[in-house]
Amino acid sequence: MKKIAVFTGTRAEYGLLYWLLKEIEDDQEFTLQLIVTGTHLSSEFGCTYKSILDDGFKINERIEILLSSDTSVGVAKSMGLGMLSYAEALERLKSHCIIILGDRYEALVMAQTAMVMHVPVVHIHGGEITEGAYDDSFRHAITKLSHLHFTSTETHRKRVIQLGEQPGNVHNVGAIGLDHITRSTLMSKKELSLSLDFNLSDKFFLVTYHPVTLAEENPELTFKELLKALDNFKEYKIIMTYPNSDNGGREIMNLMNEYAKVQPERVLIVPSLGQKRYLSAVQHSSVVIGNSSSGIIEVPSFKVPTVNIGMRQKGREAAKSVIHCETDAVKVTEAIQIAINSSANFLNKDVCNPYGVGNTSVKILKTLKTHSFEKTKKFFDL
Image (cartoon, rainbow, N blue to C red; front, side):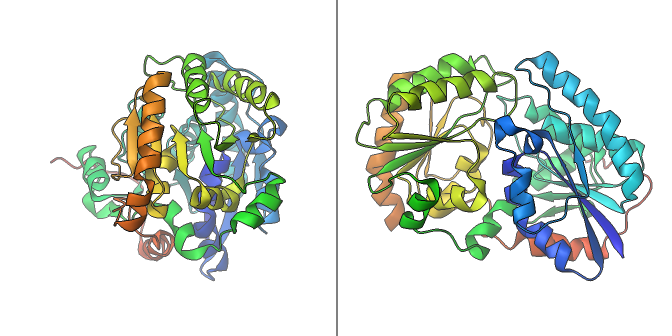
């Protein structure tokens, strides 16, 4: 049996990988090996490894790398710790290949380590562009360290080939997160309300804002502007999820908690909703607000409008239900109002999601069964 390692360092990434993990686990040709690290193991970010265990998966390797730091130096040191520990884990696991999704710094370090350890890398969601985050460079670097590629759109497939990857190793399979929409049973609004112990009888916004790590945007100032904009919609309740562990994230967490403390009946802060509750919240929300990739990739499939703030996701393909805006409170307020006014329109008309319709995990598994990994990579010249 082939041993397939899957890497996860954040709640969001695990949620996207869920159905692929199920497919690998249930297949008699494969043995699933799960490597868990990053914010999963941090109490500050909700100890989300417990959700992985609750879902019935075995964690083969738990690797502590996260420092209690909010600086670029702290991130760089975490990357160093990661390489030291990942190498030992891969030596123990003896994996046939390792699957890495996305563009996080934890993922880049794993791709580097796997290359040195001669473990072929399978990369999901390469070829995308997010100009406002250093994740953009990390993503392209992971592409060059990988042997097999699964992209979310045809544009992204062509871009990976443009980076010199062999066309036969690059497959457009759609966005893996959309599998939840076709395969998961989501919660009713009442069930979600009970699960969160928060009254959702009224209209509500779902808000996730991450630090902008590359563009000239001050995360703290931008988030304060977002909060000012939300004050203009007092009739809406708000569910906020924590940002990721990039530098600047903890300042945003502090602002969130202060904002919720003075209006606990209106604002709920949840470190991690988990994929089922998150998508259920999307389904029942009036608008999804922030700068998370989920607002671009998954949310349009629910025909719920997204207000995408600032530069973080600049360059991503987006459906017409995504409303882009600048970072000041006036522009954010205007965008939210446009989203509210457009909501019924999106429900009554087709919103074409460029990221596909789901069934991505099955497509990936089918290719893994037949793909032969070569020891060396040849650069493909256009």
